[in-house]
Image (tube, rainbow, N blue to C red; front, side, top):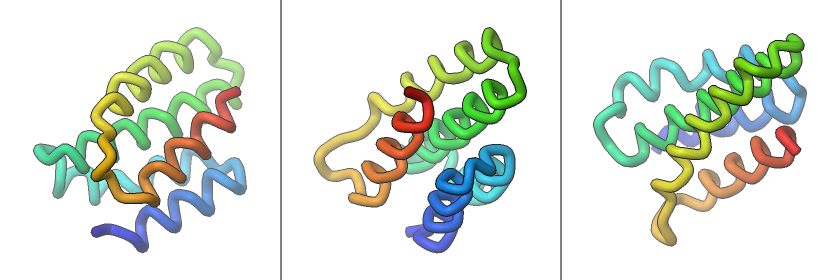
Length: 96
C-alpha cells in the first residue's frame, strides 16, 4: 500500500522539504481519493502544505490548512497502518 511514496514523504518531511513532500503523495492520493486511506493521504498533503506555508511566513493560511489536516486525522483507527501513525506524529511534531 504505497509504502514507497510514504517513505519518500517521510524523508522529505524530516528534511523540512514540505512542498516537495506534498508533491510526492499527490498522484497516489488521486488514485485512492475515495477510500479512507486516500482521505488520510489528503490529510498528510494538507499537513505538509500547512508546514510549507508556515515556513514561508504565511501563518494565517497555514493555520487554516492545518485545521483541514486535523479533520482528516480523525479518520485514523486502530486498524490504520503503522506508518500512517508515524507520519502523522512526524507532521504534528514539526507543527509544534
